[in-house]
Image (cartoon, rainbow, N blue to C red; front, side, top):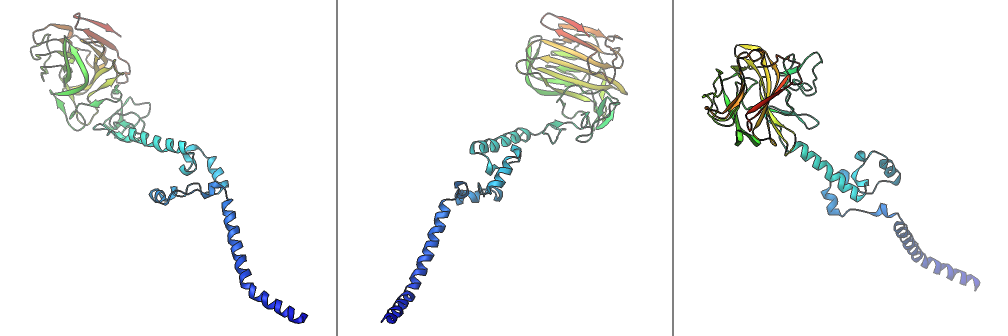
Length: 353
């Protein structure tokens, strides 16, 4: 009988084996589930599937790097860290700031004749001493300027960020011409206020009633019917293939800006006779204009310098065909040799330098 009992017990065990195996499998599944529930939360976080698909492939796997690799990345400079490893608030700052900076650098086109450098600034390759002919090419110290894209001993343009009068200089000669420009703020002479002015190639800026007259004479001159600043009225000329032109732009900040017209010219029939001066109007000082001189090859011997309200006056005269009225200066002159300031409120002028 004991033998029969043992045999019966063995048969029962064999019948229960499949059930035991099934129970073992269920235990293993439960154990795996428990282990997964005990994993660090950082390894379980996942972006919603829809958001993952919207991100670039390299940014889809957020917070899934091994902890050791995460620590290595956190030691990198901030700009080299992957966005997926930064705190949420810092991620937003990093995502927003470069976009703003990029918009500031690239949103506005450079003025005509200028090109953009890798740093984002606009430069004129024809006249920029540090970008002469090509971006990054710096002229040697033995030169005084960049002229038509080549290092030169010619005068250097002083106005930073100025642009040339449209159509003047570069590939064309300019003689006895004037161009009317819109200005960023109003200028005035003798109580006449305007936000536009005409730049005349023979050394004048007209607030109205301009003329292309090249033969200078005493003031007031009937050739110009409106308020006119005669910085250096002479038969001047812009030669093609050089950096000669009239440049204009502003300096200072509101409400104390200056409107600067910089003449870099030669004389008719004399391409190496340089005339380099600025005519400056002041936003905060109405009816006042100043002339700053850097170089004048003949010293004023054939020029008229002054200001007038109209062809019949009133006017203020500094000189007419007077040799030595203006210092000759030199191409390397970076500071004015002389500045004349005309106050049309009082009908007087002053000299400095």
